Image (cartoon, rainbow, N blue to C red; front, side, top):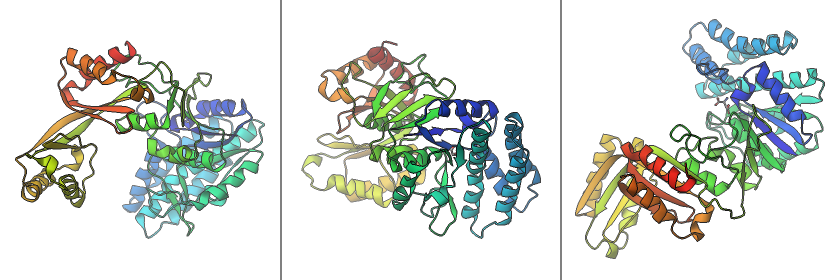
Length: 450
Ligand code: ASP
Protein backbone atom coordinates (compact mmCIF):
# COMPACT_ATOMS: atom_id res chain seq x y z
CA UNK A 1 0.00 0.00 0.00
CA UNK A 2 1.26 3.46 -0.87
CA UNK A 3 0.32 6.76 0.73
CA UNK A 4 0.52 9.54 -1.84
CA UNK A 5 0.57 13.22 -0.97
CA UNK A 6 -0.01 16.05 -3.42
CA UNK A 7 1.13 19.56 -2.55
CA UNK A 8 -0.73 22.79 -3.33
CA UNK A 9 0.66 23.34 -6.82
CA UNK A 10 -0.36 19.75 -7.75
CA UNK A 11 -4.01 20.37 -6.86
CA UNK A 12 -4.36 24.02 -7.83
CA UNK A 13 -6.65 23.61 -10.84
CA UNK A 14 -8.56 21.09 -12.97
CA UNK A 15 -5.59 20.30 -15.16
CA UNK A 16 -3.43 19.41 -12.18
CA UNK A 17 -6.20 17.44 -10.49
CA UNK A 18 -6.66 15.41 -13.69
CA UNK A 19 -2.96 14.52 -13.48
CA UNK A 20 -3.46 13.46 -9.87
CA UNK A 21 -6.28 11.12 -10.90
CA UNK A 22 -4.12 9.60 -13.63
CA UNK A 23 -1.14 9.15 -11.31
CA UNK A 24 -3.16 7.55 -8.53
CA UNK A 25 -5.12 5.21 -10.75
CA UNK A 26 -2.01 4.11 -12.66
CA UNK A 27 -0.93 2.12 -9.59
CA UNK A 28 -3.44 0.05 -7.61
CA UNK A 29 -1.25 0.36 -4.50
CA UNK A 30 -1.82 4.11 -4.35
CA UNK A 31 -4.79 3.97 -2.04
CA UNK A 32 -4.52 6.86 0.38
CA UNK A 33 -4.31 10.24 -1.32
CA UNK A 34 -3.51 13.22 0.91
CA UNK A 35 -4.26 16.58 -0.66
CA UNK A 36 -3.33 20.18 0.12
CA UNK A 37 -5.56 23.19 -0.45
CA UNK A 38 -5.31 24.64 -3.96
CA UNK A 39 -1.93 26.35 -4.19
CA UNK A 40 -0.54 28.78 -6.72
CA UNK A 41 -1.65 28.33 -10.33
CA UNK A 42 1.00 30.78 -11.57
CA UNK A 43 3.91 32.68 -10.07
CA UNK A 44 2.09 35.61 -8.44
CA UNK A 45 -1.06 33.70 -7.56
CA UNK A 46 -2.27 33.41 -3.96
CA UNK A 47 -2.65 30.07 -2.17
CA UNK A 48 -6.17 29.31 -0.95
CA UNK A 49 -4.76 28.93 2.59
CA UNK A 50 -3.53 32.54 2.40
CA UNK A 51 -6.92 33.67 1.07
CA UNK A 52 -8.56 31.91 4.02
CA UNK A 53 -6.22 33.56 6.52
CA UNK A 54 -7.01 36.98 5.01
CA UNK A 55 -10.73 36.18 5.10
CA UNK A 56 -10.53 35.14 8.74
CA UNK A 57 -8.68 38.32 9.66
CA UNK A 58 -11.42 40.34 7.96
CA UNK A 59 -14.04 38.49 10.01
CA UNK A 60 -12.03 39.00 13.19
CA UNK A 61 -11.72 42.72 12.43
CA UNK A 62 -15.52 42.88 12.17
CA UNK A 63 -15.36 44.06 8.55
CA UNK A 64 -17.46 42.99 5.59
CA UNK A 65 -16.07 39.64 4.42
CA UNK A 66 -18.21 38.97 1.33
CA UNK A 67 -15.47 39.82 -1.19
CA UNK A 68 -12.94 37.61 0.60
CA UNK A 69 -15.41 34.76 0.80
CA UNK A 70 -16.24 35.11 -2.88
CA UNK A 71 -12.57 34.92 -3.80
CA UNK A 72 -12.17 31.59 -2.01
CA UNK A 73 -15.39 30.14 -3.42
CA UNK A 74 -14.38 31.22 -6.92
CA UNK A 75 -11.19 29.14 -6.72
CA UNK A 76 -13.26 26.01 -6.21
CA UNK A 77 -15.88 27.12 -8.73
CA UNK A 78 -13.16 27.31 -11.39
CA UNK A 79 -12.11 23.75 -10.58
CA UNK A 80 -15.73 22.57 -10.53
CA UNK A 81 -16.48 24.14 -13.94
CA UNK A 82 -13.31 22.88 -15.59
CA UNK A 83 -13.76 19.35 -14.23
CA UNK A 84 -17.45 19.48 -15.18
CA UNK A 85 -18.56 18.58 -11.67
CA UNK A 86 -22.12 19.35 -10.54
CA UNK A 87 -22.77 22.95 -9.45
CA UNK A 88 -23.93 21.73 -6.02
CA UNK A 89 -20.30 21.03 -5.16
CA UNK A 90 -19.65 24.77 -5.02
CA UNK A 91 -22.90 25.52 -3.23
CA UNK A 92 -21.89 23.04 -0.54
CA UNK A 93 -18.48 24.69 -0.21
CA UNK A 94 -19.97 28.15 0.16
CA UNK A 95 -22.44 26.87 2.77
CA UNK A 96 -19.61 25.13 4.59
CA UNK A 97 -17.53 28.34 4.74
CA UNK A 98 -20.48 30.42 5.90
CA UNK A 99 -21.15 27.77 8.54
CA UNK A 100 -17.58 28.00 9.81
CA UNK A 101 -17.80 31.79 9.99
CA UNK A 102 -21.13 31.64 11.83
CA UNK A 103 -19.67 29.15 14.30
CA UNK A 104 -16.90 31.60 15.20
CA UNK A 105 -15.25 30.62 18.49
CA UNK A 106 -14.36 32.84 21.40
CA UNK A 107 -10.77 31.76 20.93
CA UNK A 108 -9.36 33.48 17.81
CA UNK A 109 -6.64 30.87 17.22
CA UNK A 110 -9.23 28.12 17.32
CA UNK A 111 -11.43 30.01 14.87
CA UNK A 112 -8.45 30.62 12.57
CA UNK A 113 -7.70 26.88 12.50
CA UNK A 114 -11.28 25.93 11.67
CA UNK A 115 -11.13 28.40 8.77
CA UNK A 116 -7.68 27.42 7.50
CA UNK A 117 -8.62 23.73 7.50
CA UNK A 118 -11.44 24.49 5.04
CA UNK A 119 -8.87 24.82 2.23
CA UNK A 120 -7.83 21.18 2.42
CA UNK A 121 -11.22 19.89 3.51
CA UNK A 122 -13.11 21.39 0.56
CA UNK A 123 -10.41 20.36 -1.90
CA UNK A 124 -10.49 16.76 -0.69
CA UNK A 125 -14.27 16.67 -1.19
CA UNK A 126 -13.94 18.12 -4.70
CA UNK A 127 -11.15 15.71 -5.63
CA UNK A 128 -13.02 12.67 -4.26
CA UNK A 129 -15.98 13.72 -6.39
CA UNK A 130 -13.68 14.08 -9.41
CA UNK A 131 -12.37 10.51 -8.92
CA UNK A 132 -15.92 9.20 -8.69
CA UNK A 133 -17.06 11.11 -11.78
CA UNK A 134 -14.09 9.70 -13.67
CA UNK A 135 -15.44 6.23 -12.86
CA UNK A 136 -13.23 5.21 -9.95
CA UNK A 137 -14.30 3.96 -6.59
CA UNK A 138 -13.18 6.71 -4.24
CA UNK A 139 -14.32 8.48 -1.09
CA UNK A 140 -13.52 11.51 1.01
CA UNK A 141 -12.22 10.65 4.48
CA UNK A 142 -12.92 12.98 7.38
CA UNK A 143 -9.74 13.23 9.53
CA UNK A 144 -11.74 13.51 12.75
CA UNK A 145 -13.83 10.44 11.99
CA UNK A 146 -10.75 8.50 10.90
CA UNK A 147 -9.12 9.24 14.26
CA UNK A 148 -6.43 11.86 13.52
CA UNK A 149 -6.27 13.33 17.01
CA UNK A 150 -4.14 16.39 17.68
CA UNK A 151 -3.04 18.45 20.66
CA UNK A 152 -4.89 21.73 21.15
CA UNK A 153 -1.93 23.94 20.19
CA UNK A 154 -3.91 25.73 17.52
CA UNK A 155 -1.81 26.49 14.44
CA UNK A 156 1.00 24.32 15.73
CA UNK A 157 -0.72 21.11 16.75
CA UNK A 158 1.06 17.82 17.38
CA UNK A 159 -0.31 14.38 16.63
CA UNK A 160 -1.42 12.35 19.65
CA UNK A 161 0.02 8.83 19.79
CA UNK A 162 -3.34 7.15 20.01
CA UNK A 163 -4.10 8.33 16.46
CA UNK A 164 -1.88 5.68 14.93
CA UNK A 165 -3.86 2.64 16.04
CA UNK A 166 -7.12 4.31 15.01
CA UNK A 167 -5.83 5.33 11.57
CA UNK A 168 -4.45 1.82 10.97
CA UNK A 169 -8.03 0.74 10.20
CA UNK A 170 -7.78 2.63 6.89
CA UNK A 171 -5.72 -0.30 5.63
CA UNK A 172 -8.90 -2.32 5.27
CA UNK A 173 -10.73 0.26 3.12
CA UNK A 174 -10.85 -0.88 -0.50
CA UNK A 175 -11.73 2.41 -2.21
CA UNK A 176 -9.28 5.18 -3.02
CA UNK A 177 -9.34 7.41 0.06
CA UNK A 178 -8.99 11.16 -0.41
CA UNK A 179 -7.77 12.53 2.89
CA UNK A 180 -7.40 16.29 3.47
CA UNK A 181 -3.97 17.27 4.77
CA UNK A 182 -2.99 19.89 7.34
CA UNK A 183 -5.57 19.32 10.09
CA UNK A 184 -7.12 16.93 12.57
CA UNK A 185 -9.29 17.30 15.65
CA UNK A 186 -8.54 17.77 19.32
CA UNK A 187 -9.96 15.47 21.98
CA UNK A 188 -12.75 17.96 22.51
CA UNK A 189 -13.60 17.78 18.84
CA UNK A 190 -12.21 21.14 17.69
CA UNK A 191 -10.35 21.44 14.42
CA UNK A 192 -6.63 22.09 14.86
CA UNK A 193 -3.98 22.57 12.18
CA UNK A 194 -0.34 21.66 11.91
CA UNK A 195 2.13 24.46 11.11
CA UNK A 196 2.10 25.79 7.54
CA UNK A 197 3.02 23.17 4.97
CA UNK A 198 1.51 20.61 7.32
CA UNK A 199 -0.08 18.35 4.70
CA UNK A 200 3.32 16.65 4.56
CA UNK A 201 2.84 15.78 8.22
CA UNK A 202 -0.58 14.27 7.57
CA UNK A 203 0.90 12.10 4.82
CA UNK A 204 3.76 10.94 7.03
CA UNK A 205 1.38 10.06 9.88
CA UNK A 206 -0.88 8.05 7.59
CA UNK A 207 2.08 6.27 6.00
CA UNK A 208 3.29 5.28 9.46
CA UNK A 209 -0.18 4.28 10.67
CA UNK A 210 -0.94 1.92 7.78
CA UNK A 211 2.72 0.81 7.55
CA UNK A 212 2.82 1.85 3.91
CA UNK A 213 5.44 0.35 1.61
CA UNK A 214 6.33 3.86 0.54
CA UNK A 215 5.20 7.43 1.17
CA UNK A 216 5.17 9.23 -2.15
CA UNK A 217 5.36 12.98 -1.85
CA UNK A 218 4.38 14.61 -5.15
CA UNK A 219 5.54 18.13 -5.78
CA UNK A 220 6.75 20.09 -8.79
CA UNK A 221 10.37 18.99 -9.11
CA UNK A 222 11.74 15.82 -10.71
CA UNK A 223 14.02 15.15 -7.79
CA UNK A 224 15.87 16.79 -4.96
CA UNK A 225 19.00 18.55 -6.22
CA UNK A 226 22.40 18.03 -4.64
CA UNK A 227 22.89 21.81 -4.47
CA UNK A 228 20.68 24.89 -4.58
CA UNK A 229 19.72 25.43 -8.25
CA UNK A 230 19.30 29.15 -7.55
CA UNK A 231 23.05 29.38 -7.01
CA UNK A 232 24.46 26.50 -9.04
CA UNK A 233 23.35 25.81 -12.62
CA UNK A 234 22.14 22.27 -13.25
CA UNK A 235 23.15 20.61 -10.01
CA UNK A 236 23.02 16.82 -10.11
CA UNK A 237 19.87 15.07 -8.88
CA UNK A 238 19.94 12.98 -5.74
CA UNK A 239 18.60 9.49 -6.54
CA UNK A 240 18.74 8.20 -3.01
CA UNK A 241 19.66 9.58 0.39
CA UNK A 242 19.22 8.49 3.97
CA UNK A 243 16.99 10.16 6.52
CA UNK A 244 20.11 11.41 8.32
CA UNK A 245 21.49 12.96 5.16
CA UNK A 246 18.21 14.67 4.45
CA UNK A 247 18.04 16.04 7.95
CA UNK A 248 21.56 17.43 7.80
CA UNK A 249 20.85 19.01 4.43
CA UNK A 250 17.51 20.52 5.34
CA UNK A 251 19.03 21.97 8.46
CA UNK A 252 20.88 24.46 6.27
CA UNK A 253 18.07 25.57 4.03
CA UNK A 254 17.49 22.55 1.82
CA UNK A 255 13.85 22.78 1.17
CA UNK A 256 11.77 20.24 -0.65
CA UNK A 257 9.97 19.39 2.50
CA UNK A 258 10.56 20.38 6.05
CA UNK A 259 12.44 17.52 7.65
CA UNK A 260 10.36 17.70 10.82
CA UNK A 261 7.26 17.07 8.74
CA UNK A 262 8.30 13.54 7.95
CA UNK A 263 9.30 12.43 11.46
CA UNK A 264 6.37 9.98 11.76
CA UNK A 265 7.44 8.21 8.56
CA UNK A 266 11.08 8.22 9.64
CA UNK A 267 10.25 6.68 13.02
CA UNK A 268 8.30 3.93 11.31
CA UNK A 269 11.15 3.50 8.76
CA UNK A 270 8.83 4.06 5.78
CA UNK A 271 10.78 4.92 2.63
CA UNK A 272 9.83 8.28 1.18
CA UNK A 273 9.87 9.13 -2.49
CA UNK A 274 9.80 12.72 -3.73
CA UNK A 275 8.20 12.81 -7.18
CA UNK A 276 6.95 15.27 -9.77
CA UNK A 277 3.24 15.52 -10.56
CA UNK A 278 4.15 17.05 -13.91
CA UNK A 279 6.58 14.26 -14.78
CA UNK A 280 5.49 11.20 -12.82
CA UNK A 281 7.64 8.78 -14.79
CA UNK A 282 10.84 10.42 -13.52
CA UNK A 283 12.22 8.20 -10.75
CA UNK A 284 12.34 10.98 -8.15
CA UNK A 285 14.43 10.95 -4.99
CA UNK A 286 14.19 8.14 -2.48
CA UNK A 287 14.77 8.92 1.20
CA UNK A 288 15.48 5.70 3.06
CA UNK A 289 16.65 4.52 6.50
CA UNK A 290 19.95 3.11 5.14
CA UNK A 291 21.67 3.02 1.81
CA UNK A 292 24.46 0.95 0.33
CA UNK A 293 27.73 2.84 -0.02
CA UNK A 294 28.19 4.07 -3.57
CA UNK A 295 30.53 6.29 -5.46
CA UNK A 296 28.75 9.38 -4.22
CA UNK A 297 30.47 10.01 -0.91
CA UNK A 298 28.98 13.46 -0.66
CA UNK A 299 25.27 13.42 -1.42
CA UNK A 300 24.53 17.12 -1.18
CA UNK A 301 25.78 20.53 -0.13
CA UNK A 302 23.46 23.08 1.40
CA UNK A 303 23.88 26.52 2.89
CA UNK A 304 22.03 29.14 4.86
CA UNK A 305 22.75 32.76 5.76
CA UNK A 306 21.89 34.68 8.88
CA UNK A 307 24.17 33.29 11.57
CA UNK A 308 26.30 34.93 14.25
CA UNK A 309 29.01 33.61 16.49
CA UNK A 310 30.01 34.47 20.03
CA UNK A 311 33.72 33.82 20.49
CA UNK A 312 35.11 33.45 24.01
CA UNK A 313 38.77 33.23 24.86
CA UNK A 314 40.13 32.38 28.29
CA UNK A 315 43.60 31.17 29.13
CA UNK A 316 43.46 27.68 30.75
CA UNK A 317 39.83 27.24 29.80
CA UNK A 318 40.51 23.54 29.33
CA UNK A 319 41.19 23.13 33.06
CA UNK A 320 38.08 24.95 34.22
CA UNK A 321 35.53 22.27 34.95
CA UNK A 322 31.98 23.41 34.16
CA UNK A 323 32.96 26.32 31.88
CA UNK A 324 31.00 24.96 28.92
CA UNK A 325 27.97 24.18 31.03
CA UNK A 326 27.91 27.63 32.59
CA UNK A 327 28.25 29.27 29.18
CA UNK A 328 25.39 27.25 27.70
CA UNK A 329 23.35 27.84 30.82
CA UNK A 330 23.55 31.59 30.24
CA UNK A 331 22.15 31.02 26.76
CA UNK A 332 19.46 28.75 28.13
CA UNK A 333 18.42 31.30 30.72
CA UNK A 334 18.30 33.96 28.02
CA UNK A 335 16.08 31.62 25.97
CA UNK A 336 18.52 31.38 23.07
CA UNK A 337 19.04 28.15 21.16
CA UNK A 338 22.42 27.50 19.61
CA UNK A 339 23.53 25.57 16.53
CA UNK A 340 27.20 24.63 16.98
CA UNK A 341 29.93 24.98 19.58
CA UNK A 342 33.35 24.42 18.03
CA UNK A 343 36.05 24.67 20.68
CA UNK A 344 39.82 24.81 21.15
CA UNK A 345 42.06 24.53 24.16
CA UNK A 346 41.50 28.09 25.40
CA UNK A 347 38.51 29.17 23.38
CA UNK A 348 35.02 28.26 22.38
CA UNK A 349 32.59 29.68 19.84
CA UNK A 350 28.86 29.42 19.92
CA UNK A 351 27.16 29.68 16.55
CA UNK A 352 23.55 30.76 16.57
CA UNK A 353 20.89 32.20 14.31
CA UNK A 354 21.29 36.00 14.20
CA UNK A 355 17.52 36.33 14.57
CA UNK A 356 17.95 35.02 18.13
CA UNK A 357 20.44 37.71 19.03
CA UNK A 358 18.86 41.15 19.00
CA UNK A 359 21.09 44.06 20.03
CA UNK A 360 19.59 44.05 23.53
CA UNK A 361 19.97 40.28 23.90
CA UNK A 362 23.52 40.45 22.63
CA UNK A 363 24.45 43.10 25.22
CA UNK A 364 22.82 41.12 28.00
CA UNK A 365 24.57 37.87 27.01
CA UNK A 366 27.96 39.55 26.72
CA UNK A 367 27.51 41.26 30.03
CA UNK A 368 26.67 37.96 31.71
CA UNK A 369 29.55 36.10 30.05
CA UNK A 370 31.97 38.83 31.19
CA UNK A 371 30.75 38.93 34.76
CA UNK A 372 29.99 35.25 35.32
CA UNK A 373 32.76 33.54 33.33
CA UNK A 374 35.51 36.12 33.58
CA UNK A 375 36.96 35.53 30.09
CA UNK A 376 40.02 37.24 28.54
CA UNK A 377 37.99 38.25 25.49
CA UNK A 378 34.46 37.99 24.10
CA UNK A 379 33.58 39.02 20.58
CA UNK A 380 30.48 38.68 18.47
CA UNK A 381 30.54 38.32 14.73
CA UNK A 382 27.48 38.71 12.54
CA UNK A 383 26.91 38.03 8.86
CA UNK A 384 27.97 34.40 8.74
CA UNK A 385 26.69 31.73 6.41
CA UNK A 386 26.84 28.02 7.19
CA UNK A 387 27.67 25.49 4.53
CA UNK A 388 26.96 21.83 5.14
CA UNK A 389 28.72 19.15 3.14
CA UNK A 390 26.76 15.98 3.75
CA UNK A 391 27.16 12.29 2.95
CA UNK A 392 27.07 8.97 4.78
CA UNK A 393 30.26 7.91 2.98
CA UNK A 394 32.31 10.68 4.52
CA UNK A 395 33.20 8.92 7.71
CA UNK A 396 35.08 6.13 5.99
CA UNK A 397 36.62 8.16 3.15
CA UNK A 398 39.89 9.91 3.95
CA UNK A 399 40.63 13.35 2.59
CA UNK A 400 37.11 14.76 2.42
CA UNK A 401 37.82 17.75 4.67
CA UNK A 402 41.04 18.46 2.79
CA UNK A 403 39.19 18.40 -0.50
CA UNK A 404 36.60 20.86 0.74
CA UNK A 405 39.04 23.24 2.38
CA UNK A 406 41.43 23.17 -0.58
CA UNK A 407 38.61 23.98 -2.99
CA UNK A 408 37.52 26.93 -0.92
CA UNK A 409 41.08 28.13 -0.28
CA UNK A 410 41.78 28.07 -4.03
CA UNK A 411 38.68 30.21 -4.55
CA UNK A 412 39.95 32.72 -1.99
CA UNK A 413 37.28 31.95 0.61
CA UNK A 414 38.34 32.52 4.18
CA UNK A 415 36.92 29.88 6.53
CA UNK A 416 35.68 31.38 9.74
CA UNK A 417 34.99 28.05 11.39
CA UNK A 418 34.96 24.32 10.72
CA UNK A 419 32.96 21.71 12.59
CA UNK A 420 32.63 18.07 11.76
CA UNK A 421 29.37 16.69 13.10
CA UNK A 422 29.77 13.99 15.75
CA UNK A 423 27.97 11.60 13.38
CA UNK A 424 30.73 12.23 10.82
CA UNK A 425 28.21 12.43 8.04
CA UNK A 426 28.49 16.18 7.73
CA UNK A 427 31.04 18.96 7.80
CA UNK A 428 30.00 22.46 8.65
CA UNK A 429 31.92 25.47 7.36
CA UNK A 430 31.14 28.99 8.43
CA UNK A 431 32.06 31.68 5.92
CA UNK A 432 31.26 35.37 5.56
CA UNK A 433 27.88 35.84 3.90
CA UNK A 434 29.57 37.63 1.03
CA UNK A 435 31.64 34.50 0.32
CA UNK A 436 28.78 32.02 0.43
CA UNK A 437 28.11 31.69 -3.31
CA UNK A 438 31.82 31.62 -4.14
CA UNK A 439 32.32 28.82 -1.61
CA UNK A 440 29.38 26.85 -2.98
CA UNK A 441 30.66 27.12 -6.53
CA UNK A 442 34.10 25.91 -5.45
CA UNK A 443 32.60 22.95 -3.58
CA UNK A 444 30.26 22.09 -6.47
CA UNK A 445 33.22 21.92 -8.80
CA UNK A 446 35.28 19.85 -6.44
CA UNK A 447 32.65 17.30 -5.39
CA UNK A 448 30.30 17.13 -8.36
CA UNK A 449 32.45 18.45 -11.20
CA UNK A 450 29.97 21.24 -12.02
N1 ASP B 1 -2.27 24.48 2.72
C1 ASP B 1 -1.38 24.53 3.84
C2 ASP B 1 -0.34 25.61 3.63
O1 ASP B 1 -0.36 26.31 2.63
C3 ASP B 1 -0.76 23.22 4.14
C4 ASP B 1 -0.03 22.55 3.00
O2 ASP B 1 -0.22 22.90 1.83
O3 ASP B 1 0.77 21.64 3.26
O4 ASP B 1 0.49 25.80 4.47
